[in-house]
Amino acid sequence: MSDPQPKSVSRFEANLLRILRFFLKQVPAEQALRLVHDRMDRPKCLNAVAVELVRDSLAKGCVLYLVRAGAWKRDRFLRGGEPKFGRLWERSPVERLTLSFSKHALDFLIWVTTARAKDERPVWQTDDKNLTVADRLLFFLAYEAMRSDPDLAAALRTSATFGENALIWLAHPNDFAGEKPPPVPSFDVWLTEPGSFVLEALQPVLEHRWLEIERTKGQIGDWAQLGQQGLVQGRVIDAFTRAVDAAGRRDLVRFLLAVMSRVLATPDMAPTFWTGGLQGSGPPRLADRLETQRNALALLRHMGRLREWERAARRSSYMDEDYAANKFWLGEWERFGPTPTPGREDRETFSVFADRAERVLQQLEPLRIG
Amino acid sequence: MSRAYRIRVKESISQDLSASDEVCSDLEILEILPGDQMADLLAGELQGRGFEEKDGKLVRSQDGVTVAVDPKSGEVSVKAEKEEHVDLETEKEGWGYDDVGPRGQQIRRQLSEQAKAELERRTQRQQERLQGEATEKLEGVMDEVRKDLNDAVNSVTREALKRKAAQLGQIKEMTEDPEAGSLTIKVEV
Image 1: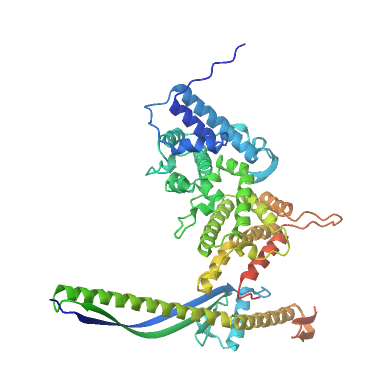
Image 2: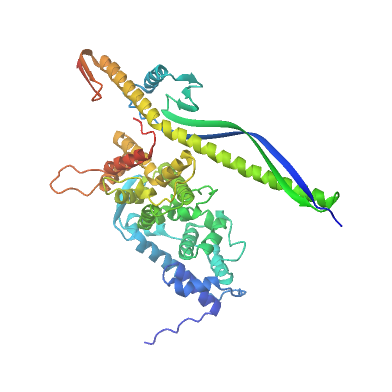
């Protein structure tokens, strides 16, 4: 039996497909980024073969990305307030995991192939209300792929489609830091199906990003930069934890527990881990210096909310509606505690890290009272 | 032939400068008794230490440093303020080659602008100096304020423990070691 004939597409269509596969992490940046930077004449339409290939790439590529990111992991997440174990497709019926792309996905791909995205103004955008979760996931992946070029990333953020994509904010809060950071967009779309499935799959990705953020803070020398980044990080965590709480999806902050348990693994952590890189004496006012340092510890400051959840969960009784979810949270609290010491019967919980965070925060306070 | 002549322009500024620095924090008060009772105890303790009630907060001002405590929420702020009145004067000098007319006016205007810019720079320097002094003042009192508030919180905790113990039963014995900061209460229930 002979191999099927390779499908034939125009140069424009070939570039578009290459860019798409670059977004889906299937083509290296060196091969695709120059295509994003080049300008091409927009054809009147794409031929059916190209559209079919785009559809196929989106369908397979996004799913493959999510599977590799973390959907493959056998883990526990909440379903209707009850924990459910398994891989993502075992936790929910496959028909509910469907991602559907709107015409905006193809529209954006044509634009990014046609325009020199870095210089083009206005950057492509569309009415947010028409976007599906799959569209937003594609824009997140496109942003991730292109953010290695800071000018290009800055250009994309001028578009509401990217600048108001809460997933981009959650994964890259520092990109939105500035003198007047815009408000954090709503996470609602990511906390209901199928957006919540995406967040479940992306837990390892988010953990990696936030770990990187925390570990590199100590290398920042500029007071204003550290203060601004910390401020945005704090706002993002605040908005996200509030939203997951309201949606009854505390399980989706698992990546924060994982990050904190790794950052605070050493018992004698000091604020200098986060602020040690600051150069010079900083702003003249003590209030401003303190604000910068407090912002740098944004993640630790939000440990309090997670602890409140733990305390509330301990008070929860069998008769409570959210008893199962509370038990689940206590399970998470134990799971992310320190590695058990051999020979020790009682297992330490995440409270160990919460205490450490509190001690670090206290060290920063010039009015350490109480 | 034009005649050279000297042009002098004087500018002065009279301004009230003010600078402040502030640190806010929270008192950690153990809820031994209900919140409102703890707040009353704290308010009483602070009043004994020279604080006065103002708009629901207990405030003490001393040498330009104001400490304000909200006994209900435990919020505390320490603010240092400095004020100063400055009178600055400067004179700029230039040369003109026309006795009267638009050229002379232009030079005067330029000299006046230079003088104003210099006054602004000097005012800015004074402002920065004043700001530095306010911050220094705040940093200087911080240890003392911390110790004072710490003592107040400890005192409130002790008193609350005594009252709680009295609620539990009859106090049989009470030993207090201020050095070690320990309080032992034996209660017969």
